[in-house]
Amino acid sequence: MTLHNTKGIVLRTVKYGETSVIVTIFTELFGIQSYIVNGVRSSSKKGSGKANLFQPGAILDLVAYHNELHHLQRLREFRWSYLYQNIFFDVVKNSVALFMVELLSKTLKQPESNPELFYFAEDAFTHLDKAEEQVLGNFALYFSLHLASFFGFRFTDKYTDETPYLDLQEGEFVHEHPVHPNFLQYPYSYITSQLLKVMQPHELTQIKLNQDTRRILLHAYQIYYALHVQDFGVMKTLPVLQEVLG
Picture 1 (cartoon, rainbow, N blue to C red):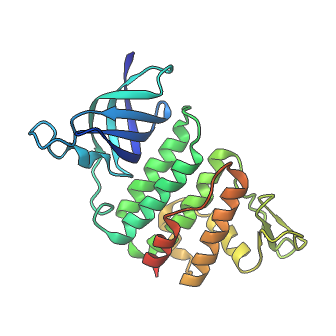
Picture 2 (cartoon, one colour; picture 1 turned 45 degrees about the vertical axis):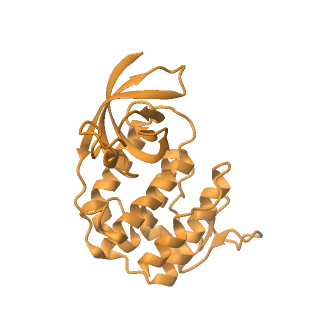
């Protein structure tokens, strides 16, 4: 087994034995991987506080053993790569972060390298940590729409007055009312087009949405993912996020 330096975003942590954890991490070099980490839950000086590094959404620097024949890898070293100032303590930011973590967990199926996706996710989490209040309400919408492009089913942004329907099955704006129920019409199709044009999170301040509109859009985007990702299911974090966003 060879050693590698890589960044990683923690997606899930499960207790294992008396003092250990099994951690699912989206890594820069190897995509989604599972690691067994011994001793981090012990009360000893060596283990004290180390389990805190494996909170969902944490961005870590890792020195990892890697063997492609093994389902479960091991970590030699781990430390904060980016230390959040707000995400773990702010209820709204934490709810958005957990939504993003779940969306990544549901879409990352195979342990294959995808550095562009990793950098997008890393950038999104760090922007979320610093985001102003006006940005937070739309952040989950922004992340959902742009994440899809890395899996090959991003909406084609060709909204016009002649193509006012957004077909969630086809992933494109169309001129005729679809015969199936999975579509958005004006104003929600137009708002989606505006969100697709946002390239940096701070631009989200320019899009003013109310609670009901966000709820409708988040529900529609969940349907969109379920139509395009096998065994996607439903987002457990979505009701919590909608409640927190008010």
